Length: 234
Image (cartoon, rainbow, N blue to C red; front, side, top):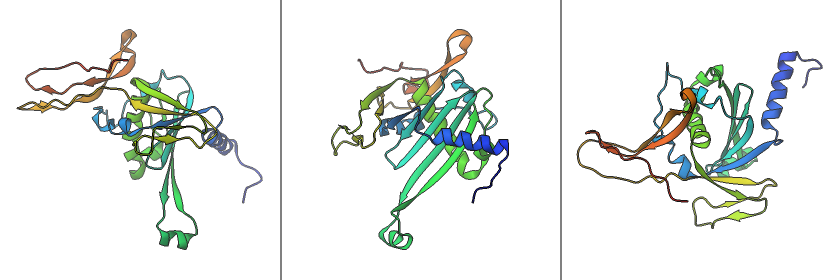
């Protein structure tokens, strides 16, 4: 039951929630497993247990929907000094559960935000369930905004790849979906002795090191041998 009157603060929260969930102005991206599988390879440090969200302060305002193969999606809305997150994941019921609940499954939802100019997190980011999402969200945005990726546009009603391909996509929506693949050419090098595995890291760059980009560090020996990252030829 809706109340006849609500205060301005609550009205503003409702307006923000409506804009966050609205399809208006959003772009849809299908994040392939070539990107997801590399998230653990990004080595990032924290300060007082927090990631440096200020690396995204130069990103232009946008509203994006990231779609994953595990029946989940992540809506990201960057505006003003805020990055807002809305994650939804669909869980299919077993036949017994479907008969009991009279529905095929259920949707789990989480809404969070962070101030990108200061790095301050929303209070619910510190809840046990939400805190585990911070690392995934942070690394995903690093790959998307601070790295070079291959993008393939699949128009409404069109398909990409075949069913046997792990990242095949059939676009049954009425909006274009962009497939995002990681185009980093990562080689596996085996050496004797103590080795450091290949990994990604954030590298300050630009004027007065005010910007950040993601680079790949090839596997190297602790004796100091380092090979520079190599990207595939276009």
